Amino acid sequence: MGVDIDRRLFLQFLGAGLTGATWHGTPLGPLAQPALHAAAQAAPPRSPFAGFTGIDPTSRDDLVLADGFMHDVIALWGDRLPGTNARFGYNADYTAFFPTAADGSEGVLVVNHEHLSMPEPGEVGVYLQTFPVLMGRVAEIEDELQDVGVSVLRIRRDANRRWQIVASPVTRRYDATSPMRVSGPALQRGSVAGTLANCSGCHTPWNTVLTCEENIHFFVPPDVDTTGRSRTGGRFRLDGSHYGWVVEIDPMDPEWVPVKHTLLGRFRHENVAIRAEAGRPIAAYMGDDRINGHVYKFVSERSFSPAADNRGSLLASGRLYTALFRADGTGEWRELSEASPLRPNPGSDMPAVPRGATTLGQVYADTGAIVTDAYRAANLIGATPTGRPEDVEVHPLDGSVYIAFTEAATARGSLFTNLHGEICRIREEDDVTGVRFTWMRWKAGGPNDPAQRGHVFAAPDNLSFDPNGDLWVVCDITTVRLNGDPRYTAFQNNGMFFIPASGTDAGAARQFASGPCESELTGPSWTPDRETLFLSVQHPGEGAGMRTPAMQAPRGSNWPSGRINEPPRPGVVSIHRR
Ligand code: FEO
Ligand code: CA
Ligand code: CA
Image (tube, rainbow, N blue to C red):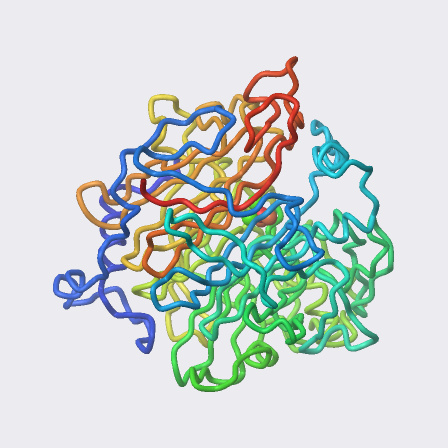
């Protein structure tokens, strides 16, 4: 594809990423860094996972790993959580691990649950199909309300390096009915409860989790008016304006009521990436995962103090911006405020503009309404429609921001045209409070070339940096395209890739894992010693459902049992070297 970058340029930028100008405390300046060589030598050591021989793409109905690695299931949908009456939810996604023992053998694992794999065009609706097989009865709406949200699991590693959930006050669930609080200017009328459509998230520098509400339209009415009001309805009969937010949870404190931070905007939140340095405001970078969705940045009003109680408060006041990308590689953060001038994107989804209105404040009732309708408000101020921005991550060494665009935008004249997606990189021109940035295409998805098996990916979704800047990428080719659409045949099942940042193979993608049929691998996270990788297996069998004798891979799934006529069950696994 024309968007793929020249390898020389790639290496140049990888080098620039290894300047050692750590993003804790050093605002990024221009790329020129005379200390490049010495600083690069000081980069953290490579992860124990990095040295592997890549696998070829496959359509096996299994979690296939590179030679020398093995996995154990930690939890599957429907498993009773020890010490509770609750079960592990459906479609596990984001994971984050919080160690609680000095030897690394205990901790708390947070796992999100996203959608419920209902019948869609070309999909059987594996959730409703398999619920009776697993539970012995038909699913009620109350079951669906329980199977979304978040699981918090106290886990312990045994002598065989197998992680198991243990009973503890910390082991618990949040679902679509759990009590919630609200910060910021929106949702100030009445009470709010429940979280749903939880996609990816963020492990904050102050050790809480941000869980991100994404495709809420599967459950509630997504549209709001210019006062920020929605209606009660949808499958869950809930108020649509209450969902589509970033929710903060304290994994270690079951008594602490989660907070929906409305100043981070309401849209199809994939995840949040935080850039924090002591004594400065923090930036929270975010993507709106829809075709023609925008990229956002929240800048806190308060400065970050590691010693302060930042929980619930640091994200409660600040400013919300959305990104304008220019073809020349420059960009601008435009604030979503009442004073922001209208510069509408022609042909995009926007509310009607009152005659003579020139600012967002003359279209919307107040700031709360603007942030509640962030997608349409961003279109009103000229934010760039992009190709489904999914994970956003901050580079561990230089503070630049990487964004996975899963596919192409459809907006006229869009800069994001690669059907197979791409990973882009943003550098702030000043510190995080600035409004100018530069950007580049860092790694393109595709092409759909069987000769490059295992070295090309499509539809990049979650990203995870190793401390030395090596990058892990999991892919989300949508189920209706997987192993069917002729533009995606080379990739076979969704997989996980590694892109080294240094060495002779720097910049060359290599496949580490392949997911079961009709699944995607999501939410990679590691223990601090990098000995264990936590990974979710989401929606196995989402297209054709539970595999029967009449079906063959790549259609349908029986993961993890592998036995025909047994239900596929989404879950979370741990992976380590043998
Ligand atoms: Fe739920 Fe954007 O993936
Ligand atoms: Ca995702
Ligand atoms: Ca996705």
